[in-house]
Length: 111
Length: 113
Image 1: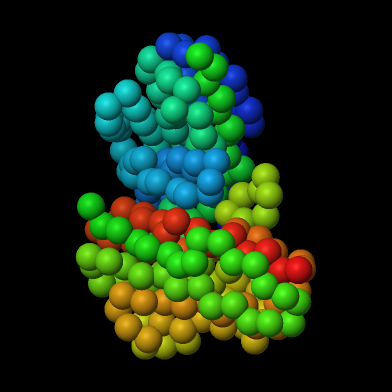
Image 2: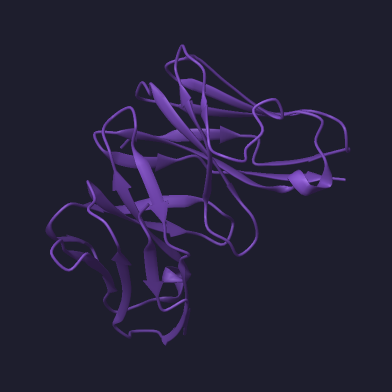
């Protein structure tokens, strides 16, 4: 069974700061997902990674397959980035895809 | 992009009643949908995998007779919480995959009085 560890659990940042959230997993994966959960509960998928790096706006996600580690970076953070960020390790194919979730990182960005 | 819609977003019911939650894929066909439950300040927990045209696969510890899942079409899966009790109060959320990407419904917050 995959173990997914996220750090930090809680993070408070000043607006404009560069933010990094880390995720480590214990066994090989098909893909690593970064999710954003808003205070109301809704979840948005930010990235799906199987190698390298992806960028979308101010968000950057990287993954190191050998080290079983991924990071999510937020540049020029803004109060609207305040949310819980969850990494999830995915394994399997179309009909049997298993996700193991980290416990999430609660980010608060202060103006 | 693909959209998954979930309804209702909030429901309050009396103990002993049943509640149905719908999860629809709006612009793609989802042969598989996933149902999760999330208690306050905890991670998402997979309850079951809903497969179109066949029985759902439930995770260990999830009561099949209490949490009825029906996936009758390629765009609709339903979760019915039968004989709900206060301990069933939780946030329920569905998801589907398309081209490997995950898409989540808006979630349903159930409160059982």
